[in-house]
Length: 234
Image (cartoon, rainbow, N blue to C red; front, side):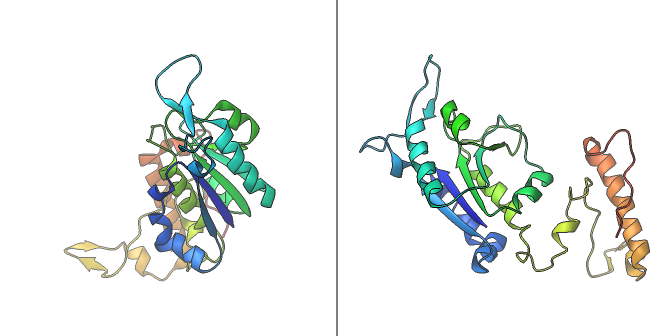
């Protein structure tokens, strides 16, 4: 997978891609991450990429021309499955979106800044808009890093255990069950006996029950109000 990130300040998000899972994916050759500084496509020698909005109002808007130049250059070299704009006024990222994007080959991520981008950018180029939550950040760079982490870790071969991502929260519409590790007892707190039993069908049944309970308690909005989740076929 190749991901091209267009940003006013790409240095803000280089660090997450130099460590942990994102670094591993690149080292293995399973993901390529390329950063593009929008100021390299400025409309003048002073690096101008933004201007006041028509009709008045506070805040600057990223101009059409620099973004057009950057995206057009990228598209002249390859086709893209999605051109994604990170913005708070968009559908919120969920596991289903991450799953779908992980199967693509080429993505462009356009990060917003200031008051956003000229609407004509969204009309001409953007094929998908994503928010990471109902709040506003100073720019879309951190949102782009979040999206990349959520997507890249799902690419086959990135994680050490291929089944690990499949048991994450939200993959089946439920939160993940509680997990435990050694020792079996610590300061009077014991690991549930079922997990020590070796009876794997019963363990899976327990985990599913715990997932349902945890989702009901913490995120009831995830459950279909007209149906009770049933255990997935193994």
